[in-house]
Length: 260
Image (cartoon, rainbow, N blue to C red):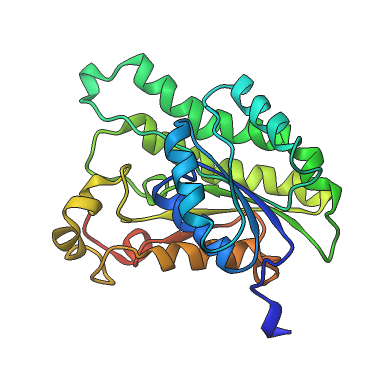
């Protein structure tokens, strides 16, 4: 039983924001466990280049789309369904951040972040609902993995108001979606990353050594840390994890007294 518990062989996955950062880490992990992976991102050249690079580990296909609007979500779903008639794993990873002082924080900075991080996550899952249901059963759950952040669990010192609010919303929305979609044999769960080197987290990317001093595990996250958590939730190993959001952060959210 244990031999195949983490296998994704024969499974089809779609990862938003898959051209870089956490999405790319997850894509490689899925590929190495045998999944066929579609990645999407707003910038087509970057998406195509990453898919070509990741094809060294398995079948990785680029589907560039902008999912920041409901229309964009529907367009991605429609495009995906020209390639596949069902979907086993959806990773809602695409996201945005915005930081400005409280007195100057703009409406467009609020709307951009909330729309992509929360609204699009919901409506893309809705658009792919039938595809996720198609092959799902009690013993063969489809999976939706929502990428939140530890900033949705505890506050950080940065004035990223809409980002922190959006990620708290993702965690609660994950619970609500999970309660409904398990009726269709779709397991919904989440990951709340901490400090991983990416364009979204430039502090970890550019100042990993200094950031590490404030992390109980004394290092920033590695690609394998993120891939391992995602593979767990996506595979049969994670079938009984429904509605929970896993903090993958080296202990910051739940065991660190200091703010980082």
